[in-house]
Length: 388
Image 1: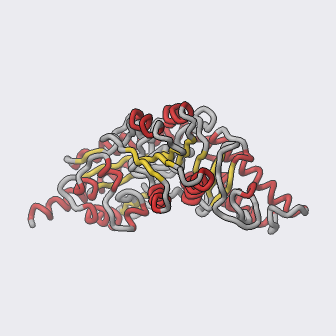
Image 2: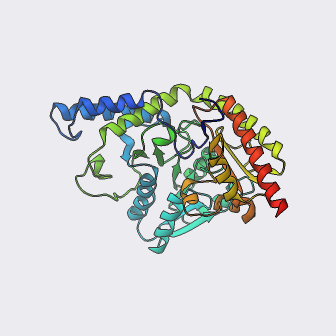
Image 3: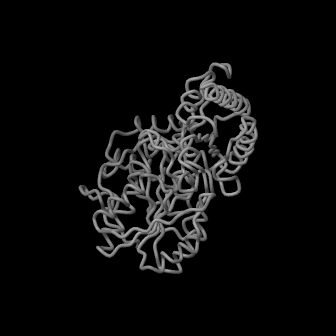
């Protein structure tokens, strides 16, 4: 298929297509046994074995023990379990410290907890989207119960220094929850070295199936269950496990572990080439810089165009570009990026932003075609605006 006729997929931050081998592993799991993995008979034990294999594959990516993983329906549920579970265990005096640029799964959960009496501190970010560790120290000293922070921002790709944050949390005796939905498979994760108590993960961001994720829970972390029923998973998350989805998560984790370093280097080169090429449109501002940004991410604001018109033009043109104006959930609400506004961008700049996120299927030819398409569409929209 020619570059002119295909859709160029550059929205891997929203979801990644299934990684090689994942569908086959899921099909095998569906065919190998129909049994409940909690059952003690032979078919049940086979289902449990498939889950154990997946647990080993996912745990290896984060340097954790398999038994410290709790399977969930995805990062949103993991975040809810982490935040609500810590507060329920801690009681009415809980104080959670987080960041204004967190994913809505965290921000909305914090807002709900705040309505029910939890004290919440939201740290600001600088123009590059990073927190000030001095601000964190002050919040930690104010009887903090938990710090919850995203490792890689889902809109900009900005990386927070989790190792330094974990060190400060440990010094104050405060547990650290990390939303690693966007960093899993892209950055090195080590729950021991980074002193992480809780870590939220999602399968579909790394080429696994949608509808499955995990929460790493460090031993002796105070956490109360939010789903009750059969008492599965040490009573922390009741419900029959989806064997085939979990097996698919494991297969994706094994695949990404084998290629992560070389793939991220490749994507960084393509991302920087794309950034240089987009600059041909003039008055294009990169959001988040490049020093502390994960390799697959490029977020830009474009002066002189309306954001919705630019997005529609890019997604409907030829070649069509599968890009976004930020987080998929924010775009669905018709909102400009609160992440970019928190970084000091004007409402107009935040509203005229495009997020490119690269992945396994991204090629140099696609990057060149996407850049040409972007430059052409920006010129067209500016000409319309100038003539009005």
